[in-house]
Length: 393
Ligand code: LCS
Picture 1 (cartoon, rainbow, N blue to C red):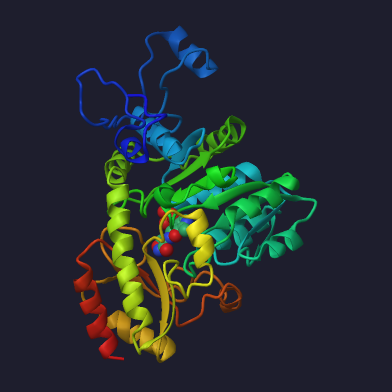
Picture 2 (picture 1 turned 60 degrees about the vertical axis):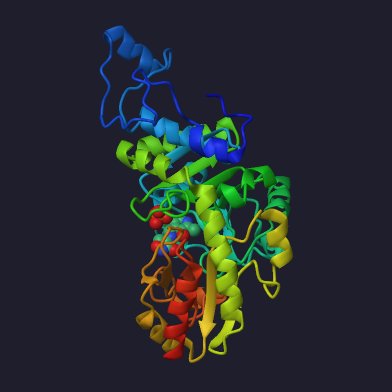
């Protein structure tokens, strides 16, 4: 079915599907590493690009193609490339668009390893970077140099939930011929579509909301135009971070319920955030759906909902936070996010431990910050769980 002009939920179910000879209702798993050629000329024509078809799964596979086409339609992009992990998407992006002597500007509070890999491995290859508070557009402007080639934004950022104005940042970057990539992991295309706001590339850790069931790791890059897509595809194919067909099948299955899961999780998150905001043991809380959230207006402008990620600090700082994490029973004490189950974790000692304390503080990732990924359980049960654990502080 052609879903180009269909609504978002129809695309979730049907975009990327292809007609299969037995009439299977879902895209089958083509669990094969290689594809037989009809004859020697057919093989040569496939390699020369004279004929369309499949050669080898690192280069392309029908199940993987179906996922890439679905994601491209969800993000309103030209085409997607999926990979073994979100970090594989990050390193493929950097390798595709940056070479020795180039410079990248990025959000200070990005996911820890997205920064750590740039400042260690890519710095060793001669790539320069500046990490700054991109919520202030003037900081991006100040950081621009003649050799700046990429602006890498994460909004909402992990774990500070800080937002960057995608439209304004993209307008500024494009004046200087700088490409813009937005890590859209925290929102998913259901809540935010960066390409429509002016970005050139969208990045996802598919591990999170898009797959949504905490049972696979995966990543994706979706490009707005063919030229950038071709660079990403070539880099992924050469570097070899491809997704496995079974993994692609799992993501295709998981993403079908994205709208339903996000609606329920963010409804829960709003109630939990309001409960926490009024709790005497809570020192501060950041959730885009709260009127007290400094960028509440920007959230309303560039997102169609406030998501289900909450950050907060409790009385007693890190000590209090540890008591909370050790006493919750429903919420799993685990990293990752965006699944159907509620998770709690401590960024300074877990997801962002790869950064120095100085880098963390510069990005506002304080030691007491606790990150809460709200699931789709009954909200009363989640609140009761928090209530009994907060009592212990
Ligand atoms: N981008 C963001 C915003 C992320 O949160 C993560 C992982 C990645 C990229 C990398 O994706 P992965 O390779 O793990 O699929 N974030 C994690 C987190 O907050 N807890 O555990 C992993």
